[in-house]
Length: 217
Image (cartoon, rainbow, N blue to C red):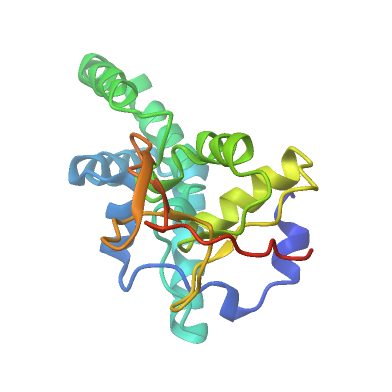
């Protein structure tokens, strides 16, 4: 229901992010081969609505891949499969009582390795709020250039905090000059001011800063 409106306005070109084959797709979503085996075993055992739902989803994904060349889901784009997998395995565990202990141990381990501050795909965004707070405090009127895709997060926090007096940080392009740079990777010709962890994002300035006109917006 939530996705009905945006999907009806989408085109095949919007679905460019994904995997080349089904096995790689499932591995990117569930991470471990053992999880896939548990899901297959649970689906074969259940043979009901849940297994049918999984079969219909895989059939739909196959059709989209063959007819529209839409790639298979990759990690976050296949997150809807995770609740279905949990229901399938949970249903099987209600009957296979001997599986309760190892699955409980697996659940505890999965929760223990979660890093709430970042995701596997966007570790560079772990400190975006702190990066913007530093820029707002020390360079509220500076021309700021940020490497892609860091600029998007900084623009978000600028809008969120309604900092209308601060020029919007923009994406750093080859040959661009700025008063302040937000970088993922070190640049020897720039002087690093601060580095944030765990993202590794750094704020840097030219070695001999030359005042630039603030951009109009």
